[in-house]
Image (cartoon, rainbow, N blue to C red; front, top):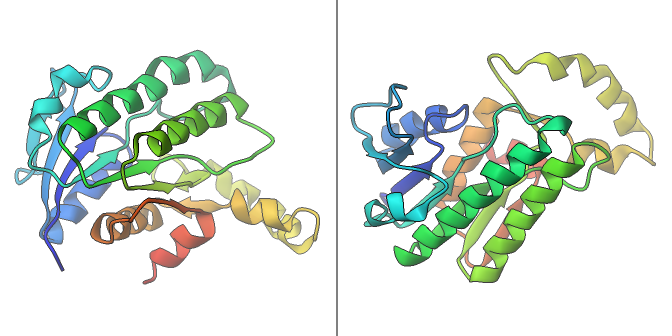
Length: 218
């Protein structure tokens, strides 16, 4: 397995804080972007870069020599009433990451998007779709993963919906949507991200919920 040099934005978040130890365990080199003044711990083997994820000039020079850029910045616990925050954080953070990735001549970008289309969370999905469009237009090879909801510590409430999912999957008219908007675990998400990093895309690759689950068992 080839060693990857990975730059991670959103490193101390729900996914990033679990992804980084796994990357280090597998022998990859990791450099992590954190907010200036953050006291959230990261593994000692991880190089830390303090900066503003919304302003590429605060961290772009620290991206090299990475070959892979993983963008995980986003408003925590997305909700329908957070539309203004999505546009204030999620969208400009992607613009900043793309600018830094281009400047650093990154070979592969990994982005956690969201399953789409969906009948709810329209503001969130719209912003993530715009972010995907930005990624497609700059010409970088990229993997875009599209989970719907990631189950894990502090994020288990959707388990109550599992009986409903079981019913919807049996009905021809709702089966496809139930699969597309299915739930994944944090362990599955981390495994899928590791796979994406270790198997860079040529061009743009989209990984949906069903594939995220499969990659976790590969």
